[in-house]
Image (cartoon, rainbow, N blue to C red; front, side, top):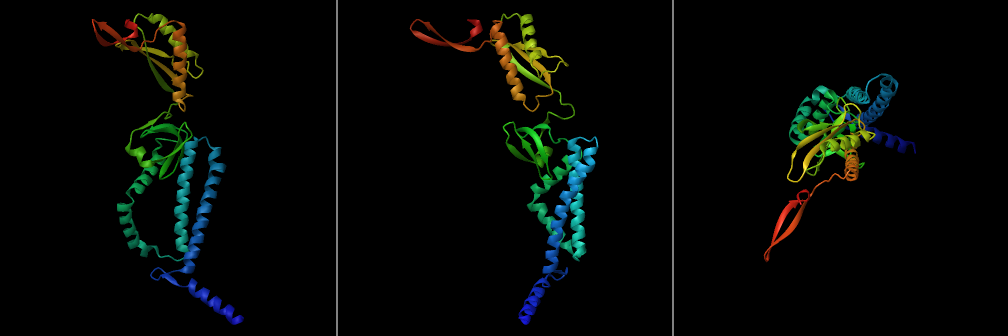
Length: 296
């Protein structure tokens, strides 16, 4: 029985001492130790980053987006330092890995260009902060609120509560609309038309009253009504209103204004024209003509 235990022990020791990379002195045992150290570093990084945010950054007057950025950078620094110390502890000769690192670099340059591009773009975003957590943005046809920024991608939540993962490179190479950048105050534009012959002074009072009556319309700057020109069948106007609470739901705000305008104009008997088709008979031949309702 004792010989069996001794044989098992010797076999396990031989397996653990088996050199995987003789030039670097890496054995099975050192590789297992390295894996355990890497796990400890990853778990420790998450714990330290959480403590860094809750015990230090939360007590400052920094914006949440800046706190998130600092915590991310600190976490990456902890991971880099932890992995370096772990490799040194197991006796890995990092200088001998220079050739391997060069080969890996070439492979990354050709095969992982998109990943590297997104990684560098993530660093630029975290450093320059063109977008931040909670911002309302629009990029590449995607519109929503920024929920999370990582080194590879950014998570955007749409108004339909759909999470869209946007590669960070899109924020560097594409035009980005940030509704919340700097000043949350935004001007919304609502175009509409009324029939020829409308009393414009009366129209202006009604339209500005509808805009001012909405609870999310700012009192300063005041709403404005612009006369955009003479259309084929209507006088074209544009209502411009300022708001800072509806950047996350701009479509809902504009829809409310349209509902209010339609009701107010209908009650004031101000006509909103629309084109219609008329059939005119000349002798026995019907003739189709397109004319606006306001010109009948």
